[in-house]
Structures are given as C-alpha cells and as structure tokens.
Image (tube, rainbow, N blue to C red; front, side):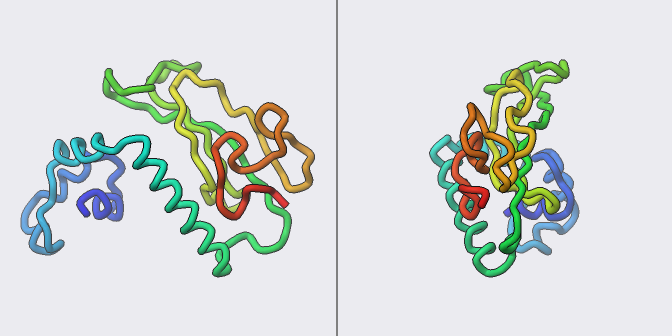
Length: 167
C-alpha cells in the first residue's frame, strides 16, 4: 500500500515514499509506512513470471474497460509505437546501458493509442537498444510493423487485449 499511496500523492520513486513516514501518517493511512529499503527489497523479489502475470491482468482490465465502452469506439484505430529513455542512477541495474543519448538507463518500446496516449503495451529493453522500429501503425494498413509484420500493438510488445489487430 505504501507504493500505491506514494504514487497517488505524486511520488515517482521509492525514495519519495520516505516523505510519508513523518508525523502521524501511519495513523491516518491505517497501516505502517514502509522504508524505501524495504520497498526496494519487495520490488526486487518480483521475477519475470510475476511481471508476465501482471501484464495479463493489465490486458484483461483493458479488455473489460473497452467492452464497457471506455475504448476508442468503432472508428479507425491508430497505434503509435515509440521508444523512450528512462534514466537510471544505480551502477548495477540489470539491462541498464549507455545508449545513443549518452544516458545510462533503459530504452522501452511503448505502444499507445493515438490521440489519447492510452498505453496499450510496453516492452522493456536495455539502454543500448535501437530507437523505435515502428514509427506509426494505422488501421489503414499503410505501415508495416516489426520485420514487415502486419501492424499490431504487440508486433513488438506482445499481445494487447482489444487491439491485437488494428481493424
């Protein structure tokens, strides 16, 4: 709960949760606020299998939300695929490398719904990965995905619930 509540009040790293350990925050929240070192230990305990399970949960939540009417509707669907640089500060972060920007970090590939920037899928890649392979894949089929595949949200990122095809 400490991680979720830290994010809700604007925290963007585990060290920000330490600010919630002051005064009577634990009494207000109804539970003890964990130290950043404890949060780090908890987060490091996750394996690739855990992340895959969370990804499936995200896919199901997104599918249900779209079925309930929160999706893009029946019109054309445009999926933007781009990469971003996520800087890291630790020296022994697995996969963190110096990339073309001379910044140590990760270089994830992100698929999002154009116009709303709703994230449909993310693939974590090392910092020295190339920039995005797909600039834009649209439902008109005018663009191809990774290695000439039909453009789908998970051509590079894996399956996405409501958008495994762009039609």
